[in-house]
Length: 518
Image (cartoon, rainbow, N blue to C red):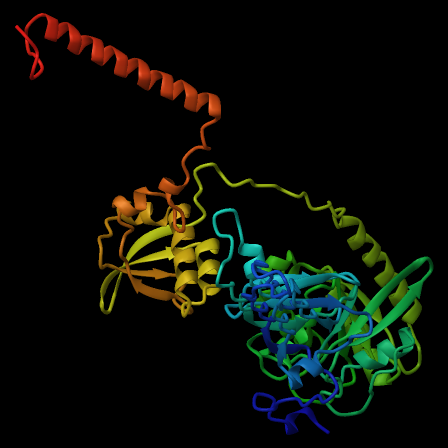
């Protein structure tokens, strides 16, 4: 079928067995709630708290699996969720942790966030990355008990798991990529150079998915990729455009397969090469992956279909012009197996050169950055919203504490207030100008907690001690018998001294008792 019969700008390929791009909506498991429980046992009326902790939620993990070759399953089922942690129980029974959700992906999968930034490049069998972390389980009242809080009547809630939306893009890992117009004979070359058996037919866009083959030339072993055909405007997504160019980003050698037997008007080997080179120069690879621009890769020219007499004459005619441009040119025929040995060894030579240029992988250095002594772990800023100014408190600990607080329990709310005060949130609010009655928001805008701030008053009751204590009831130990005797002796001595002083005053005539004679 002639290429002109297709409207390539409007045509969309349909591949039912291969997908190299998928959008996933991932949810990690939430932590289980802690339990407030009191031990009840015969003859033990005051058994104390025995509420267990909740289990941690399961995380979502992406792992490179050699058995995974496509993202088709994630394209059909994009919503994935890990298991939640189980709640705790009485008698100090902790809840079970939720199972992690492990998602197998092919090697070469690039994970991006919703803004297009690369999160991780999954290369290497067994490589894994935690893409959504499960929530922490809440503490039971047994874990919250202390010397000052002997029987807490509350427990902490489980923390919700992370929810993320990511884009998975599969970029084929190969040493050599065969590029060219549709029906140029790329799949035929792969079938004769390796053991791969791609689909071959006499119509354009027969190849809808990348085909990988392993080629051995002497002592060199490398992989070769047959990717979908290229047309003008591919860098803008026309035809199979980006579907093609994405898979050549990792290839170090590009082999232009030129159809010398085409009968389409306006096409010849030199024109086809210029069109493809222009598309390569306009495509911008991901800079975060460290790849060079496609136009700077090593390129070979493969003049194919030399088994046709007219095609062979055309190939021999344009070969000097291509060599004058600095290209290494090969005249081959995939059908007649002509010139394949020379082409294979040339590819192997360039692959070895490219591998030698790649710098040795340096093990990643683990950098420990301890928190500075003046880092409080939170920040307080003044913002202006539709309803007026307010103060926002952000930080890992304040946000996590708010999420784990049961606001229907007054004791739990008081525990949260104590924790925030000890952290220094109230002092920081004073510094930024907050006064009683101002609106305070803790957390991000998505799941923030809003309340009117009432600062802790330092009145007489608070000066007696912390919540649940009374300094008047915590005086020193009872005095010993010797200490009591010493106190009594001091009292008797003071009484005797006072009586003697009174007798001296009476004898001096300063005063007298009723009935005394002159």
